[in-house]
Image (cartoon, rainbow, N blue to C red; front, side):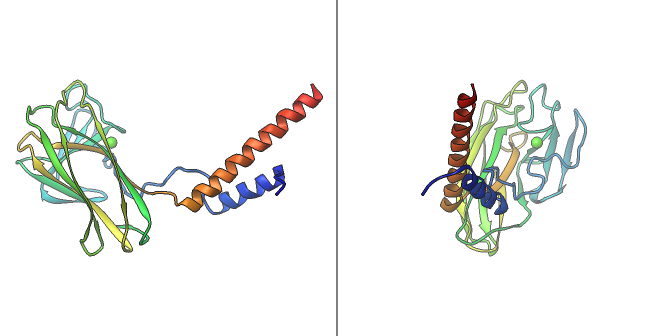
Length: 221
Ligand SMILES: [Ca+2]
């Protein structure tokens, strides 16, 4: 097949029309970065009510950057301490729509409460609409300080088996002042092979157009 700039444009047009022109994936979670509501610098909000989330065990802390010394949030100005007042804590995301058989990627940043010398651990679990577990893993963190929380990054994929799913976090190790810190929780669909094929075609077309342009410029140089 002869590949022309116009056919490259057609491929790009098709890809764009299908919403596949960029590999950027929309986060299916609301308030995954715990920025809503803004609680102001230097404050901590011990709460059982966070937009987009249900507090399932005890209470949790939404923490504003600056409260734990100069250490920074991973994303934005606020993050979550999975243990509020007490020694346990848990949260569950709102239900989000899924397509059975589609692969999704769960990503988040985690650290541990810098005021404790204890290691902190939490279970992260993805459940389908009937509470079957699609992904279960324990994350463990230590060494966070008030200067730097030393955020670690979690990234695991799961395959949906129904029309909805939820993410939940449950503190397992740490106790009072030993909570796991969470930020930038996101879920996004992983592009399917067909999508990648379209994008590769699109990029090939762009490369070819660049080649044609440079040849044209040379011809006029
Ligand atoms: Ca945040």
